[in-house]
Image (cartoon, rainbow, N blue to C red):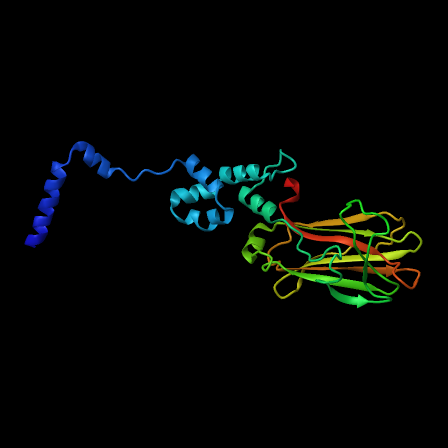
Length: 274
C-alpha cells in the first residue's frame, strides 16, 4: 500500500511540474493523415491490398477505403467509365472490380487450340473440326472457326464461378450481369442449322435460368452475332453451362454445317452502365 501511495504521489508531482503546453500535448491524440492524403496513398496501392488489408487498420482507413470518392477516382484514373455518363453506378467499388476482372470465361473460344477445353457431346458426320474462315470475319484477328458436319455436332463447357474468382456471397449479393455472345456463319451453297443454350446452375447443378432461342437456319452467307444478358437471376448461381452446335441440312460429306467462333461468357457491370 505504501508503494502504491508513493507511486501516485510521484505521478502527481510529475504532472504538476509539467508546463501547460506539455500537458496539452500529452492529452492530444496522435495526429492522423488527412483523408485526401490517405486516399492518394491508397490510389497507389494494389486494389485488393486496400480492401483486404488497409481497411482493417483503423476506422479512418476503413472510411477512406470504403468511400465512393475513392473508387470513383480509381475508375477515372484507370479508364473505367460508364458509357452513359448520366447513369452513375450504384456501387463504384463493385463497378471497378467488375471492369478490372472482366474477361472471357470460356477457354479456347475460337478453336485456336483445336477442340481443347471443350467437352464433345455429339460428333456426327465427319465430326467437329477447326478451319480457317471461308468468309473473312469482321474482326481480322479471328483466323479460326469451329465447323460442323452432316451429322449433329454439339459441345459444351461448364464454368465454375468460384474457381474463376467470383465467390458465392458476391454472386448472391450483387448479381452482376452475365453476358454471353457468339458469332456464326453458314456456307454459301449449303443450308445449315445452329443451336445455342446457356444455363445458370446452382451448386447441385440444377437449373436456375436458361437462354435457349429457337434453332436458327441462316439464309445468307454473312457473319451474325447472338448476344444475351442474364439479369436479376436471383441468388444461388454457381455454374454456367454453355452448349452450342449444329449441322448442315443437305447431308453433304465434309464440313458444310454451321461455323462458330468467338464464343464468350463475361461477368460484367450492369448493362445500363456499360
